[in-house]
View 1 (cartoon, rainbow, N blue to C red):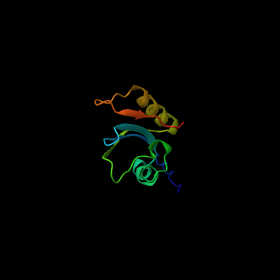
View 2 (cartoon, rainbow, N blue to C red):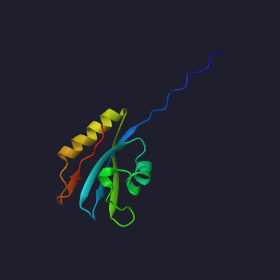
View 3 (cartoon, rainbow, N blue to C red):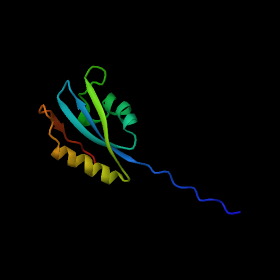
View 4 (cartoon, rainbow, N blue to C red):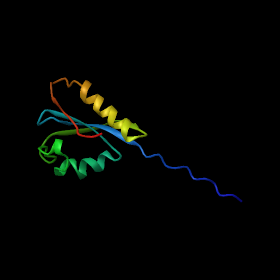
Length: 99
């Protein structure tokens, strides 16, 4: 009896938005695991663009916006959002380095 081929698990790339109400700033990012990225690098100063954010004291909201098959597509969407997003209260948009 032949072995069944196992389907490869799809690894998604997610686009997310982080809003800092204390500093009045918005950040768009792309990651395979936004939760781990937030807790791992964003909240400990590992991301240059967010080095002045304080996850313990600032009022933050993290929102997952979309998912994509490739990092390039997710990064493209995040950069497009940076260019086109307008916050209703005039928050500044933080530019990402990214791809």
